[in-house]
Image (tube, rainbow, N blue to C red; front, side, top):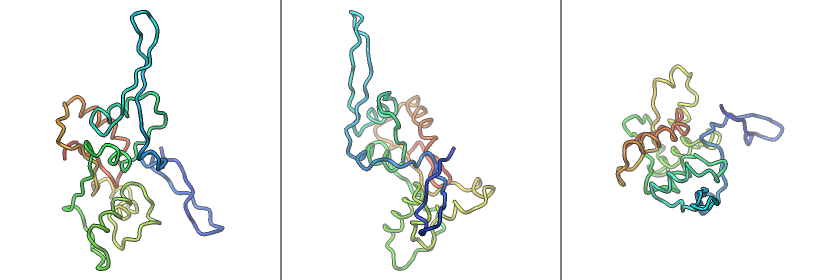
Amino acid sequence: TSTAQKSHAPAGVSEVVAVDPAFQTFKPSFFAKEFVKKTSERCGDGTLETVEESINNSLEGLLRYFQAPNIRFKSRHPLLLASRFSRVLLFRYDSSRASRKLDPNRTEQEYLLRSLFCATGFTEKTCTLEHCESCEIRHEPLSEQSSRSAVWCLALRSEPAIPDRTRAWLHQHFECSKTMTLGFVENE
């Protein structure tokens, strides 16, 4: 289900905008915060010992992040995940599906960056692109949206090699990040 968040509407205008759960905001400190997975294990003498495992920029780190019981309210925002786990995840742009008309005043890189921001949940009110696929998809009737696939996708890198069971497990966890504007693919 979506939650509501107030938009930056003009003074005196109260507008509620639906926010996809995958795109809930997160603290900027999450980009650099040191995360640790903490679990308790029973020792031979029956006592409990806390085991800490580092969450780093690796496949193991990504798995630990999703499995860590001590990290409450984990952010599954695609920008955060792709940044924190850049050795495992990347964004893919399907240029064959793009139907954009470039603004002559913008570079290709600027267009792609702004388009990615729109695809990852920034509202169309902040989009300054003349023709943005993500904003166009959001405004289509639902019947037309289901026939289109997202232009942007979060993808697993091909290296390191990821076992099939782990790949399937990760796929389940990324289902919550899929929207009409951002997909998930298992291969780079």
